[in-house]
Amino acid sequence: MILRAEQPTSIKELADLLDAKLVNLENDLLIKSACDSSSDVSENSIFIAVKGTSFDSHTVVSNAVDNGAIAALVADETYLNGLPGIVVENTRLAKSKIASILTGAPEKKLKILGITGTNGKSSTCWITANLLNFSGTKTLSIGTLGVKGPGVEKELALTTPDSFELHDLFRDALKQGIQTVVMESSAHALTQYRVESVPYTGAVFSNLTHDHLDYFSDENSYFNAKQHLFDLLASNGSAYINIDDRWGELLFEKLDCKNKKSISTNKSADLNFTILGADATGTHIELKVKNQSIKFKSPLIAEHNAYNLISSLALCTSIGLDLENLVEFLDDIPQIPGRLELATESPSTFVDYAHTPDALKHALVSLRKISPNKLWVVFGCGGDRDAKKRPVMGKLASELADFVVITSDNPRSEKPLEIIEQIKKGTTREVLVEPDRADAIRYAIKNADADDVILIAGKGHENYQIIGDKKNDFSDVNHAKQSFKEVR
Image (cartoon, rainbow, N blue to C red; front, side):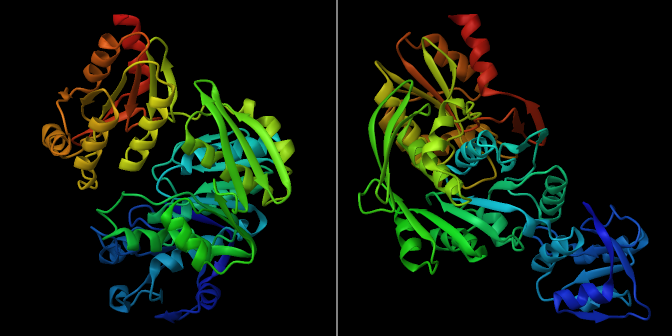
């Protein structure tokens, strides 16, 4: 990507701001843009070289020069081959700082709210952004569901964008009169310094469960990545932590933050809540904060969505909004795409993004509570991702649902049947295997009784399926609706 500078910046000034070494410079250079692809270079570009997990772009500095780059930022001076450049220890970190410098530091003029955790980020982001917009605070949301705001809608390749794209979004947001940004802050983004220049006004830790252990060696490493979000809080920033999660409890105990608040069903928590009742139409909740008690109904079903909702309300209060006013907007929140989204009735078919053991468990437990009869689940596991969770999810599905249909998710480069066999190793009873996801959905809808409940899990809002190197059009919601028309 090319990031164009708001104002041209001299390379000497850039090096000074980075507190970095400047080499091979005879005359000062005016930097008008920065790029991270050697083939995507603009006028007066500085090329940012980054060592990734599978490719080191230091090896293509010369290509960037051939395409017009006038300087490079590197971690090893030898790659410059006489080219003017800036040498730093960590180019990812420097890239984030450069993104801020070239865009005029828009992040410092916005109120930015972050959410981290294995599950619940997208829902919390969606709820928070909608509540803020309804309350008159122009807000942009950034995350798995894309970029959304007043007059803005854009898909993203990553849950948390690269630092160049992120700061470009911040800059555009300011120009459009946006006041607040709500952003999913993934462990990958935090580890890769994509958000390092962001001074968060408020931050939420939702939970930490089994996921991404193909990237992070163990849960401790995964936790360390997540907790870094709270190192980035502004000096007066607020932290909201779910202490009913064991990792959240640990984070709350060790976090040095004057504005930290606990979220729990325990009455001693700063924000403690009780679920008074739940059915297919929503959840009745009582929330207590200090001496204030508020009872309200959320249109969202499932206990885990109560945590997401309380976290959202907390984030909204971090920028000065009133709780009692906020709950008035709950009925106006649109359905969260692919998060227990009701696709058909009789049987009730829900589509959910649950793609981790914990998320699958919570979705099934929640639907069991509102199911008058049998509970079905149709799911698979993604290829080229953490394989350790596959048998765990198979075990959970076979224990918590009455009927289990194992199918393909996004197999990517792996063979679908091999993934399915790994899932089956964890199952405790007979399950049905149907590798074709469309046929698996059709089978469940055709064979379920009218008062059964079906969960189609794993892909949620996604409108594609990746098989091999092909990205095919595919929507669980659309396939469920089409199957219902054809077989019921």
